[in-house]
Amino acid sequence: MLDAVVATQPRAYAAAVYGSLARAPAAEVRRQCAGSGALGTVARFSRNETIFNEGDEARYCYRVIDGAVRLSKVMLDGRRQIVEFLMPGDLFAVDADDRYSLTAEALGNAVLTRYSRPYFQRLTEDVPELRREMTASLKRDLAAAHHHLLMLGRQSAKERLASFLLLLVTRRSGEQHERVDLPMSRQDIADYLGLTIETVCRTLADLKRLNVIATPERHYAVIRNPNALRAIASGMN
Amino acid sequence: MLDAVVATQPRAYAAAVYGSLARAPAAEVRRQCAGSGALGTVARFSRNETIFNEGDEARYCYRVIDGAVRLSKVMLDGRRQIVEFLMPGDLFAVDADDRYSLTAEALGNAVLTRYSRPYFQRLTEDVPELRREMTASLKRDLAAAHHHLLMLGRQSAKERLASFLLLLVTRRSGEQHERVDLPMSRQDIADYLGLTIETVCRTLADLKRLNVIATPERHYAVIRNPNALRAIASGMN
DNA sequence: CGGGCAGTTGATGAAAGTCAAGATATGTGG
DNA sequence: CCACATATCTTGACTTTCATCAACTGCCCG
Image (cartoon, rainbow over all chains, first blue to last red; front, side, top):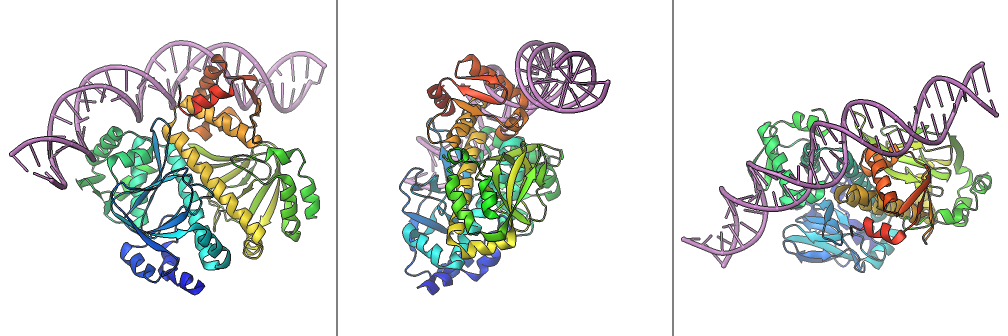
């Protein structure tokens, strides 16, 4: 059984999981997870469906197989901060203790694998590979949060948008791509960047005017000038 | 030798180290370190001294024995975001991979224990107790970062200051204390909260005017009205 | 074809930043 | 131990950035 677990640990992840935000493409993940068998069960969620709420008893942890998930914190008066967008291959809720510390919702239709927590926890004790993957996942999330803190605490709206687009590019693969998918709404982007939806729109418009990016459709962007974008993101403007 | 190190961990800290950012009580720290053998060495740093810089080769990880440490990220043009303030009992740099992802500096004079990373890493493989402590430390840091993100992304200056004071109170012990030590400078507070030093001063003045806090001296505050402070922190104002 | 939601753009206001001056600590040499 | 020099902190006047409020567009789906 342990071998089964370990086998679900796709070899490609070794590479995919490497690098601060690198992820494996969905097709690959699907193939790799095909053998997970008894350990995890598949769960499907539709657009904007809640997977769990902050404060709920933490019964499972998850892996994204297909689609995307947002993790967020919400204040009593409804103000929301999105903490992370999760892509195929990403583990989440492994940091939960008794209760979930964040809310998880599907961005679009999403397919997840769900592991019962007590089981998962025992496995992390017994299976060094899984344990290492969990630790790696925690470290990556922590590094991402630290970068995110710098963005929210010290960057202007334009710098935040530039950094955000670069994060999405980077996470597709190691190299630069022209096309960046934006599976989340403008409101989600605003809530990730600590801005309002209006400021997100206006700032994207600015970047278009500067010929740094283009948005032929709402749910993807094209990076016309990666160097300029990097320059803006790092404050050289 | 280890016992000697551990003995320098003042008993008074036992209480100091507990809270939302719950830390192992000193007694426990002592016990856990007892098995680490010749592994840790003591290192002393003076006010504002650099312990390591972001990007340096990660040769050690650390535990604060006495004093306090700040972890930060700095942009090319000097903008700084403080990510965490560390207190006695706290582990840090356990998340580092090849290079440190943050800069660490002593707030005042500080005493640390330093563990060589390869050795520490092997120990985390072999010693379940230490491994669990490391995982717990990562989870705590992640939860703290997520809360911090909400503060920076969605709270006003006044709310951030109130939350900050409450964080410092909470971490001293489970219950509320009147007195809150502020071992860091106003600039450090500003860089933690994503504000300017002037805004920190003015906002503290506001809170004083509201009789929520008092600052008899610059390096500590007295919470006159904890309920009001909590109300402000959670946006009820 | 039309209702509704997501996104965009414009006009205005408020919160926090910047620049500048003054006050209070802090630390050092005489 | 005092006096002066330097740091840090505080407060004030003004500016900038982003939020708010409001109107309008276009796209998606029945």
